[in-house]
Image 1 (cartoon, rainbow, N blue to C red):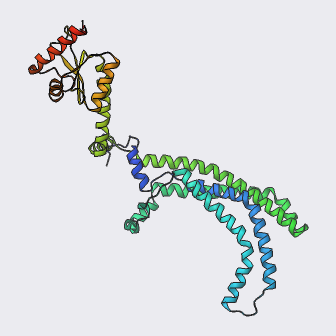
Image 2: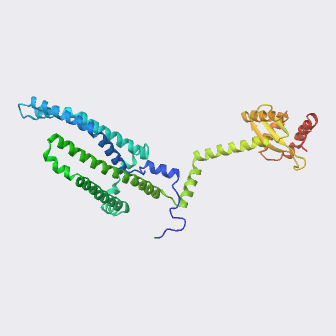
Image 3: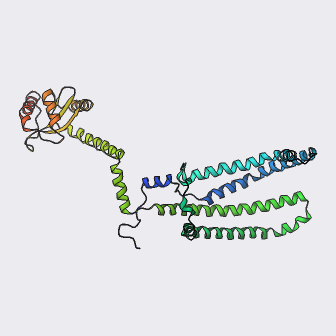
Length: 355
């Protein structure tokens, strides 16, 4: 069924959708990248690890020959095996520690620290054979199978080329001492492994790029979904509160700018402050350009002093203006007389008049 107009997933995922997907474990992660990095570092550390293993194995054999058990009881055999293997545990612990640390580091570097239990919760839909068959024939499954086949063929070709290039040296191993033969074989195998891992690392980088693209495509949204999410966010108490705080901050900033144009500030004198502006050529009555109580009233008085705006204490008028007027309102008719007296006082005593 074709998608209806407006239902095509053309929009990038919103931060909320990405966060929800992240909580469910849907993140871009390349197993190939982690495996290749772990293997290449292990190859670099392998000489030291093999040295520890070899020394420990030789010491274990020497010890084993000296403490050969006299009886064949399970307990004696177990103690004997532990005594033989114990000297080699340092090399094994080094290999496991490097692999574990690199595996965790690479995964965290790709997706960050994601603690999600949803991906581990039981999903009985996965036990449905029909759903499993669909997953086997899905685009992702076919792509992964093709990727694995291509990787196997490529690695096989690289290994064959390395062996073919060293064929002469391999044929001559029978003519050299055993230790030299082992060293030569190890060098050939190590060189071949580095070539394979180098190509694997390049393929892993490409795979990580495609995994990010795949997740981005999976999380894309329709325009209707984006609108619905925005409506849900606007209905959220936290979002509404943040928007209201932002609006109040913007309104307060505009109010302080308009305060600079005021002709007079009427105060309580401490609890309330109302600023009035009256342009005789443009206005029929004074207009409230700023008002506030307590701390905001103190701020209004401070700004008024900075800009030399007259401050007139008149508690009844200040309270009435504060309660009856909003920003931008014209002074009510019943307060005309009191406001006119304040303005007349300002014009007469201070000489402040807007022309």
